[in-house]
Image (tube, rainbow, N blue to C red; front, top):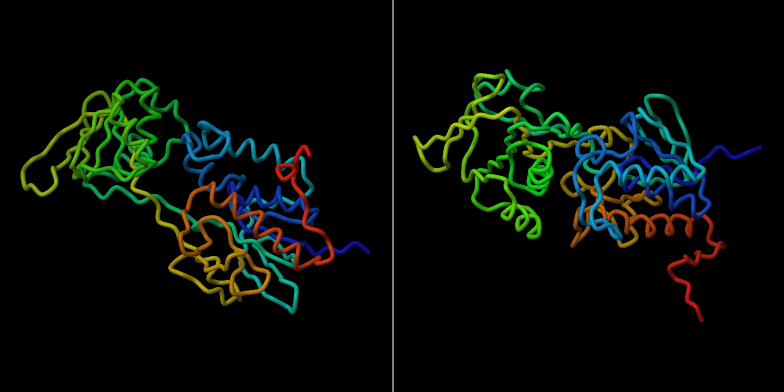
Length: 331
């Protein structure tokens, strides 16, 4: 009778979770990926498909959707179960097996890799008078379809990496792009800030959006107040407003699991092999927390082989750790 128990269950189907599935298959592990969204790719695919990523090894620049597509192509060559629109509602440890309950059923696994990022996410809303009147029309929080900005006058609000990247991305499509931030300094990578300053994007700093009003030709008047002033206002008429104030995330589903995971704020504390305080539960990507951690995709990719190999060494100690093509020499 075939054992229906998985070697590894990966909870979360973002880029890091997808790579975990790929690497688990390379180790001949029986694996499943459980993802609550309707498709793989996580936050990158859901929120930033057009974002240009500059910190992916081997890629001078790659859009989020293309990274996800490449990972999907790799994953399609491997044998594993991909479960979409499925949320893990509970995990119970029974001796050396984990019983996993989702909104669609139950499964068993010898080990778990948590790759849920920061959990469920919702955009931080623009708290300005009149904002609700334009939300979903002239006011949006994601740029999934870049064509909606074609030949438009666009104002991007925010000061981090994503806001800068979106402003630079829209520069090639929109008629005019403004970037409004409440500080004079931007919080993005130095290279991206340099590109921004050399671009045609018009910077409006230090200003905060206070009100949105309807204008002629289906435009919106953005009323922005200069910081630390009482009556210094600027009015900008635009076709589209793209707000990027970050996202509010939570891991309420994880909190309902019958596990006492050691947490540090909203992340899970791990040891040098990425194992949590519970044996054979590992955490990778943004959900893993340790000293010196940089929460970028490249870091998560590097954590995956460490976690998977630690699991396989524990489950099958008589198997040899594989030699990879990148370790071979021409001697």
